[in-house]
Each structure stands twice: as structure tokens, then as C-alpha cells.
Image (cartoon, rainbow, N blue to C red):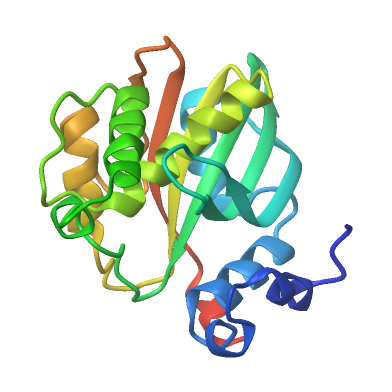
Length: 217
């Protein structure tokens, strides 16, 4: 379904009347991506630093990636498929303004069902995490796993997970940083982190700071 502009994204939200508001991430991300000529420049900067220039082939809002251990999918704010000089990159995007990353693994796994145990084991296996600390935010884990699943589905050479943040204070960056430390210590905002998964696929992680103007539209 072709997009007719930012308002086309609203219909894919779980609660359109609640989540579609000025200054909130869903609307902000939609306007930022629609205004871009291809990838938003801050997202392009993250990916091209590692992969060279990336041509956007496809962008899907609120894209759902199935995971084992239950019926609820990992729902990316944007899924982007791009082409670079070495192949394809499958990128999941988590848009943020001031919203947190949801529950930590410790909270999410409290009184966990067998399905949750299965899902966490699967996600950690994809990422090569032997023992996941309870203070890491689960949303970052499954959003990154979704990038790897989509990379396999599209035969992409590379996978990426980018937090597209529109918070001037970079709220919740420390949560992203804690997650990245599990895979490769040391990260800074607007600079990519590159690692290799157990399946030998290159994985790019990044925090991209978006244009504050899009919070007001």
C-alpha cells in the first residue's frame, strides 16, 4: 500500500487515537521519514559509516516480525530494507521521544510462562547472549532479534537496529548503552556499533538523534 503522507501511518497503530499526537514518537517518526529523500539523514549517517551509502528500497511502518513462544510479534516502528555496495541491509527502527523502552527482562520474566521462557532463549540465542542480565530492557532485545530474522528472510548481508530518538536530552540512552554492552562494550550517541552474530551476520546498532522540528508537526 503506497503512502499518501504521514497520516497514512496512523492506521497501523494499535491505538491510533491515543498514540497519534503532536510530540509523540509515532507521529514524529512518520513525519521525519516522510520528509526524507530516502533514509532520514541521521539514520543514513549511522548505516553509511559502516556500509557506505545506503539506498532505501522499502520502508514499512509498524512492521510485525513473528517470534516463537507466543502470538505477539515484535512490532518495529519502521522496518527498512536498503541496498549498499556490498549487498542488502535489513533495519528495524525503534522511534522514541520521551517514552521508556518498556519493562526490563527481570520485570518481563516475573512469573514467566513457558512461552516467555522459550522466546527469551530464542532471542538471546540469535544475539549470542549466554545469560541475559535482568536490568536490560526486553524491547531492545526483541527489536534487534527482529532485524536478524528479517535479514535472513530477505537474504540480506547485514542487519541493523537503530533507535531513532527525538529527545533533546537523549532520554533513556543509558538503557540503550546497557544493552549494547552485552554485545560490544563502548558506544556513543550518533555513532554505530558493529558486531557479528553467532550466525556470522554483521549487525549494526545505532542511536540516531532526529531533527527536533518534527516534534512540532
